[in-house]
Image 1 (spheres, rainbow, N blue to C red):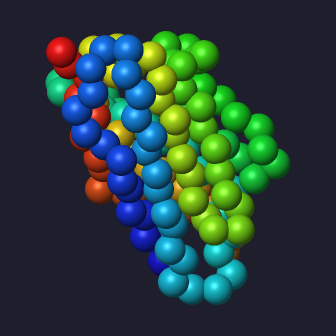
Image 2: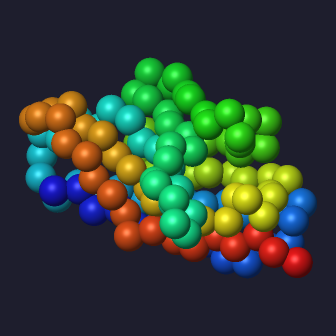
Length: 120
């Protein structure tokens, strides 16, 4: 019903920048996307929220990324980007795009993930 394709991961040095992009393809009518966001999962750890942007434009960020990462969304194109600046080794993880729909019912959709490695 909603397919997500992520791009933009890779290897970057500490202090560097990357931009992740996610495009949502909706295959049936009547789907209402509320929130779009990014989560990440480091080796041996749980998947955690990085940033989310809702239909009204409100955003939430994990404390560890505030001031360094910025989420943005194109509502017409159903895309969500994550601009990552001042990257740290602890930002290394697989980043997953997430979409939350509210119609026809509440559903969660996930992308396959894109690896971000911050290392010198």
